[in-house]
Every structure is written in structure tokens, then in C-alpha cells.
Image (cartoon, rainbow, N blue to C red):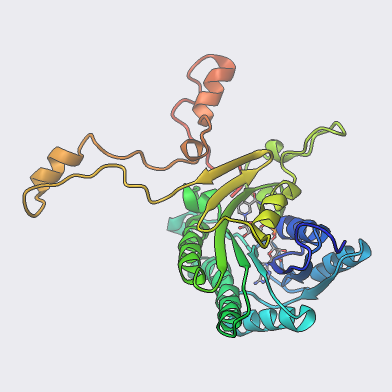
Length: 333
Ligand SMILES: NC(=O)c1ccc[n+]([C@@H]2O[C@H](COP(=O)([O-])OP(=O)(O)OC[C@H]3O[C@@H](n4cnc5c(N)ncnc54)[C@H](O)[C@@H]3O)[C@@H](O)[C@H]2O)c1
């Protein structure tokens, strides 16, 4: 396993005991990277702790001839995140790639959300991406200052929930869009030291997506062998591996990936510009903005897909369901 596109690279993958993180860890190890399989081992809602699942993935990598160790650090704890970075460097002598992937969901509409549901999800995703990034960045800054060439990469995990919004996910979506801002600053600051920073918005069948309400048939594996499984988390991992390669050119990018579909995304685009002679008045705003508003985001428009109403119309040729929107995106969160 030592030869591959990630040969010589050391990578931390957070939340790597299940789902996407596990797929990334196995793929990157298969490409020759030495892996720290980090996972707290809790439930999909973040309850409990178990070192077994991370150990299991590290063992799976070693059984295939790769190099891996397990870490049970909580990525959203500042000091444990520092320890995680130290453990990687202590075990393998360096760190080149940080894949921030750990995640939980606690869905609730805004009117019903508890403070704990808000805090836990924001903490795990936003601080859980920021804390390992902060400590990895300090290591790379020091390496750069000592004259060692740095070719490092951070891959952050966002979601269409942050990029377009999903009903019932105010906490999760707010954190996931915050992660885009975090990556942008990491890109700006890391450029001085040789660190690249990119965001992926994945879509795959995992504990998170199968715990969603509503019909999940689009996530089921194909019944016929040999048919492409478009919901397999492993479909996302080659992009993560590519972003981690020493000479990958990408930085400051956002990608949505699921199945065989890869979208390159640009946010923060100015849609229109208006000016008046002096300070804006309410009458000016009436005149310029009424009837001239940008489309509010929708998951279907964002992903370039028909709405549920349009799909039903295509299927049945009438307006059944027209005007409805899907309560939850089936394209993953
Ligand atoms: N599955 C999708 O379609 C989808 C869509 C958009 C975004 N995502 C994001 O992808 C990432 C991976 O999710 P998944 O779908 O594979 O779900 P998953 O539940 O299978 O994996 C998440 C992992 O994170 C771990 N984790 C939770 N808290 C942790 C902590 N404090 N420290 C370390 N590890 C911790 C969990 O134990 C779990 O193994 C998440 O950030 C999720 O928000 C997934």
C-alpha cells in the first residue's frame, strides 16, 4: 500500500469510524497515506463514546497492508484537538492533510429547538472543524518558519443544508455555512505557509441521511450487482484524496459531490447593484427592490434539480403537488 497518489502523506480524518469519514480513511490509505482514524464513537445525535469503531477502521486499514492508528479525541474540544494533531505527528513524524468530517444532527424547527440542540450541533461542527484546523495550522506555520517546505491541505465538510438551506436544520445549516467562512480564512492565512483549504458538500447513504424523516428509496443500494451505487459514501472519497495530494492546485474551492455528479460552486456573488444620489430612502427601496428581488435559495434550484411539484407534473402530467417543495433534500445534508 505504500505506493499511490498519497504515498508519503500523513492524514487525519475526523469522524472516520462510520460513513463518509471511514470511506475517506480507507481510500486515502489505499493511496498510500498513513492515517489517523479519529472518532469519538457516539450516536448519530452525538450521545455516548466508544473507541471500538475507530479502532476497527484502523485495524481494517492495517489488515489491507496500510498504516493507521486510532484516536478517540473529541475534535470540538480545543485541547483534545491539539492532542490529536500531536498524536499524528508523534506517530508518523509529520502531518500533511486534515480532513474535517466529524458530524452529528439534531434536527428541530426553529420554533421548537432547545438551547442544547443549538449549542451541541454548532459546537461539534463549527468548533469541531476550527479546533483541529487551528492546531494543524500552528504546526504548519512553525514548519514553514523553520524553513521546511509545507505542502499541506485541509478539506472541510459543509452541506447543501448550509449552502441552500434545509427545513428543520437551522443549527446544522448555520454551522455548515460557517465552515465555508472558516475554510476561506484558512485559505487566506494558510497561503503564507503552503496550506490549501477547500470545502466539500457531500451526498451519500450514511447514518446521518438514513436517520432523516421521509422516504429514503433514492438512497438504497441497487438490487442488481455491478450497477453503479450512486449513494455509496466511497464515491465522495476520490475528491477528498485528490484535494489532499501534495501537488493538487485547488484552494478556496467549494465542491458538491454525490454519485457521479461533481459541482464546482461559487458563493457570495453580487446579483445586482443599485445606487441613489445620497442616502437610501424607503421610497427608493420601494422603487428599486420591489419586484426586483433575487430568488431565495432552494435546494432544487441550488442543485439544478426539479422541485417535487415539477417532478410530479412530469410523472403524472398534471399539477398535483405543484407549489410544494420537498421538506428534506434527498440529496443528503
Ligand atoms: N451523508 C451525507 O449525505 C452528508 C451530506 C452533507 C454533509 N455531510 C457531512 O459529512 C460528515 C460525515 O457524516 P456522515 O454522513 O458520514 O455521518 P456519520 O454519522 O456516519 O459519521 C460522522 C462521524 O462523526 C463522528 N463524531 C461525532 N462527534 C465527534 C466528535 N466530537 N469527535 C470525533 N468524531 C465525532 C461520529 O462518531 C461518526 O462516526 C458530517 O460532517 C456531515 O455533516 C454528510
